[in-house]
Image (cartoon, rainbow, N blue to C red):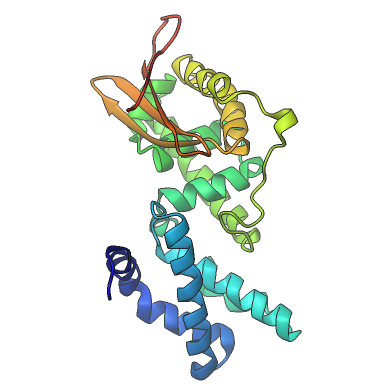
Length: 257
């Protein structure tokens, strides 16, 4: 019997089936072995979909699952793993990444970017701000924002290609409890940094949030205000609003029911 989850999974993966099957065949060296690899990839993708239903199964994500699955096959069979076979993955355009692809790479590869670059990637490619809105929130001209974004996206993609063998939940860096600040303190620090257009502080507190298992689920911009939706490891959501730029002492906080 087909379930709702099955329908959603099929809807997300069907557009990529032909290309993914071809890619699996290229990795495995034959259509026959490629079919087996493809079945393994789809099984892994489905398990991840069930565990993280909000995580869209984009083409880059499926290719990354395939590459990691083939890497595991090579390790089990003790055969040579040839990185040049991953060329198709490396040639995927950055425009094909969705916000989940960007956020995962950004959180894991934060050291690859300067604070200013990381913050602009976060605002535009994860939170959905336009370059104009990002410039207005940070007090910078849109031309400068676009130039930095171009360099940052190129740098992030290259860094992500070098760190291919990592997937959400498989070795993501986690801070120990002894080094974690409280979630409330962290997201207040992040929103305060946003309000003050302090990119270095935004960069630092976002890293701490990620390491503590807290995600910024989404950001909505309504009538000049940015509404941040934070989600803790237990799935609880807290909503914090703040003007783009303001000298008010504290952002308004309320818990989403």
